[in-house]
Image 1: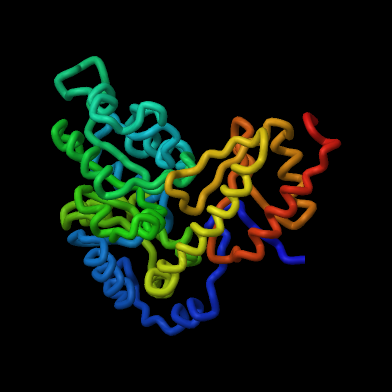
Image 2: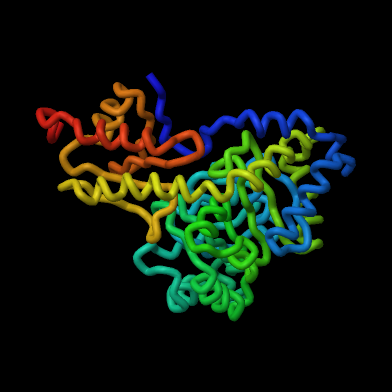
Length: 346
C-alpha cells in the first residue's frame, strides 16, 4: 500500500530528472571558490532574489543563525513573531552561538507599528538588551503557513527602519508566498537586508539553503559558515539540484496549495475540529480534534499508511508537497472521515 507522508515537505526524494542534473554537474572545491556550478548558481540566485550576492548553506537553520550572527552582537535582542522557526526549532542556536535573545510579538497582536515599537529597546537603555534586528518568517510555519505579501512587508519594515533595525527574512518557504500572491520573490525581499531561502522543502531538493544580502554581509556570512562547520567541498552536485528545483518545481507549488485547500475545505465542514491555516492557504494545515486525543488520530492514520506530525497543545500538522498528489489527498480525507465514533473522547 502506498505510503502518504504528510509530516513535512522535507521528506521528498529527488526526481529522476533532478538526479540526472546532479550527476551531470561540473564540480570543484567550493572552499577554494572553484566549484563552477556553485559559483554560477550563487550568482544566478542573487540576481533572481534581487540582492548583491548569495552563499549556499547546508541547512535553513544554519542560514538563519549565520544571518543572526552577522547582524547582531552578543547581548543584543531580536524582534520576531512568537513561535518563529529561528527561535522554536533551531536548537537554541541564537543564544548558544550569537548570544542574543528574542522579544516576541504575539500572533494576536500582529505586526502593527504599535506592537513593533512596544517590543523595541534602544541602545541607550542600559538595563535591557538593545534591539538590533527584526526577523520575519514568510511563510510562517507554526502559524499554518501564513504568508505576507509585498504591501504588508513594506509597512512592517518601514517601522523597523524608523527604529534603525536590520531586517532578515526567514524565507524557507518564500516560494509559496510568491506563488500564492502572484508576486516575485525579488519583490517580497526588496526591503530586507538579508534573507534565507530553502530548496529542500517545497522545491524538493535533497539538501540545501542559501543566504542573500549585500557583498559585505555575504563576506561575513562565509566566515561564520566556516566557523559553524558549514563549509563544504564538491557541492556543485547539490547546487545543480537546487537549480533544477528552482527551474522546474517552483510553478507546481500551486498544486500543493490546491491539495492543502482540499484538506481545509474538508476540515471546515467537520464539527468540533479546529483549523489553523494561513489566509490565503499555502501548503501547511494544522488541525485539532476536540473529541479525539491527537495520539489516537495519528495512530489511526498510521494504520492506513498515512504519516502526520503530532505537535504540542493537541495540534496535528499536515504538509502537502511534491510527493503527494490529488488522489492521495482524497484518500487522506476518506480515512479522516472513517474515524471510529466509539473512540470519541478517548
